[in-house]
Length: 292
Image (cartoon, rainbow, N blue to C red; front, side, top):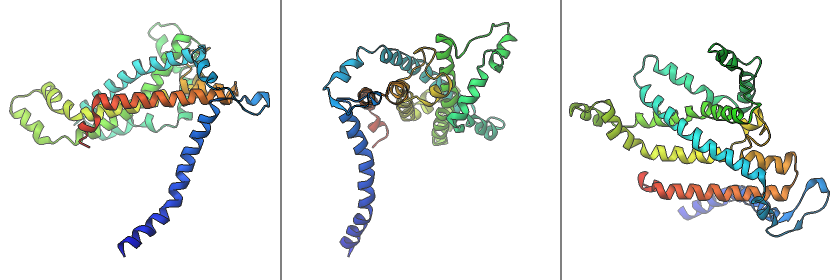
């Protein structure tokens, strides 16, 4: 009777599983197939096999180098700032007067849709009428071309990324702190530990797995960054704020229409993300930290 129920359950779920696998596997295999072909939609020709030529061209492409440089800058600058700010807020918001209100306000940037955030930041960073330049002028700082300069446009994207994703870091760490047994903290206080010692010897070690998970999640997300760039700078000026994902979009379906080359770039990005994630998980021994 039990076996019959199990077989019936499997038969009922099987079509959905097959449908999901088809939706997942088929696009990936098609992308892999196209990455070995020359297929430019502007040429009105059927795709033809060119072997590894698309992959070789990646290493000669100046656009890829610029996009990679900007993406690495984002990882090295935005990610540490987000982790530090999120940690600081999560720790020091505890038992603050109006904690619930402050916590709700801090989560607003994370809930704002990318389109709305893009329009909002474009207005804020407007050279002539933007509030950012207005407040800077009160400090006798000249107008800054936030979205028109190679340097400041990168700074603007970094600021927007920090604004949008620091609340996520804060939320995860804040939830993690709530799970720390108060007995341990009270025992530390009884033994004469001050706030810094409790942070260093009790809270930080217990939050360690969450830090590693956040680093992996944000790293993968930065490598896929697209919406903010699309809505504010559109990768400009020049190639200054091209993220890898945005460059793939431009090459494949916006300006280049080179589906074959875009597929090769996408495959390489997927490989890089997979390798980085695997290395980080193994290096941090995440499974042991999570006791899985």
